[in-house]
Image: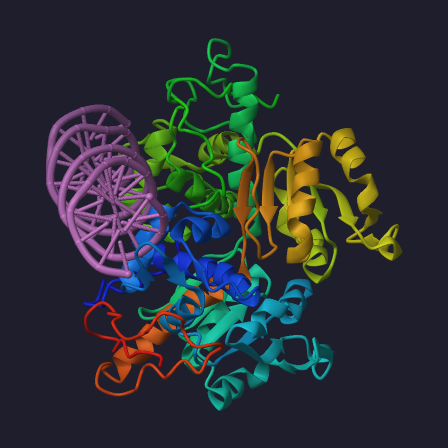
Amino acid sequence: MATGRTHRPATRSRGIPEATVARLPLYLRALTALSERSVPTVSSEELAAAAGVNSAKLRKDFSYLGSYGTRGVGYDVEYLVYQISRELGLTQDWPVVIVGIGNLGAALANYGGFASRGFRVAALIDADPTMAGKPVAGIPVQHTDELEKIISDNGVSIGVIATPAGAAQQVCERLVAAGVTSILNFAPTVLSVPDGVDVRKVDLSIELQILAFHEQRKAGEETDAEADVETVVPPVATRAPATGAAGRKGPDGDVPAVMPA
Amino acid sequence: MATGRTHRPATRSRGIPEATVARLPLYLRALTALSERSVPTVSSEELAAAAGVNSAKLRKDFSYLGSYGTRGVGYDVEYLVYQISRELGLTQDWPVVIVGIGNLGAALANYGGFASRGFRVAALIDADPTMAGKPVAGIPVQHTDELEKIISDNGVSIGVIATPAGAAQQVCERLVAAGVTSILNFAPTVLSVPDGVDVRKVDLSIELQILAFHEQRKAGEETDAEADVETVVPPVATRAPATGAAGRKGPDGDVPAVMPA
DNA sequence: GCGTGTGAAATTGTTCACAGCC
DNA sequence: GGCTGTGAACAATTTCACACGC
């Protein structure tokens, strides 16, 4: 699900499962909200509801961190906020750079939740020389030439790539060479990185396509699916498939595989 | 991993595993690139490399769709593009609306890969009346009042929420009431939706926090972990934990589970 | 009694390894 | 000989259900 590379051969590491790690920020957000309303304790049930998961999962997740609850009572909100923050490494400050200050990069730079939790935008970097010096979200954009210097001067270890797809791999390599070891990639490309570098990907069009899949499925069921449709129709599609489409077998039915033409 | 709600009680549905569905767009992208270069066929090995997965997984994934390859040869690129597109429901046109035309919404509206694959931005919607009529990415922004009408006039079933967190749930409810059944949520909130509605979430700050977790882990190993750092500083944090922090136990070892107070 | 913490069961996803077909 | 398709082993994750401490 997450990182591009294999991510680490499960070093002895005191294993908090990856799936759990991915949910900790969710819990943290819910807890922070409770904290702001000065709620002192929550049960797994309540917190789970606020985070949008089920309570068994939440309890299991917390059990990997330690025994932080009180039976018959629940969890102390402040204490848990602290423990999760610490576990996630948010008790320290993480300078990040954003490379590629187009529409998206600007949106990211302006994104408030960014700075809120331990992350600090150390620099905005863009390849367009005419952008240099222009402030975005109050931070002056710097030219790509400065990239290496910025990284090392600020001790940046997390980089955000918001460039066009074509530039992403190259930017990635420069970031990595300069010392960045975690990358959040918004460009629609697969980045290849050396071992030890983490990549996470955010990809709008992939998300939409996944939704479309389920959406299509729903539509098919409405009309009660099954029965009908010949399931696989000769692919009129783009150019005719090289190999004869004849002998192909789709898995049996369900989604009315109606054709374009 | 994806959807907020339980997503469907595993109706008998001809199961393509969710994990596989999530990778299909990746394959599709790699295949499209090959297609543009007029490459006629690929092996699972090559395609897997291009998509950033391993070949066994890819073959298994494809096996859920049917037998679309040729032993000893590989896969016909065009044919596979077509099959995957169809499976994902991209042979039809999906009108989407984007609600919340701030920095992020504008970035999304401008995002090219959007329109490319079967998705069409049917409307941009914002609550700010002064935005109304202003074109963003060539599309005039409309006021929230029009939301219901827009949805039904255009037969929109996919909505993108790019509003501030505070407005998201309400927007979501209006979208759903108007007939939207798939939502892509960029607001940092948990949306609650009725059964049958799919929600996918894209959350910058969560991704960063996950990276920070791994980053911290790396740093710990470098200095050979253990020993050093007081690791936990008294949680000067907000208020002191209610229940005595005394008896707490972190999981054994590694990070010294030193207590707050 | 209530709600956490957790073994054990169930489910889902990944990898192996090889038979079968080109 | 090369490469797909897939059962079977393995690994990760989720869910169940209940003992245990407050």
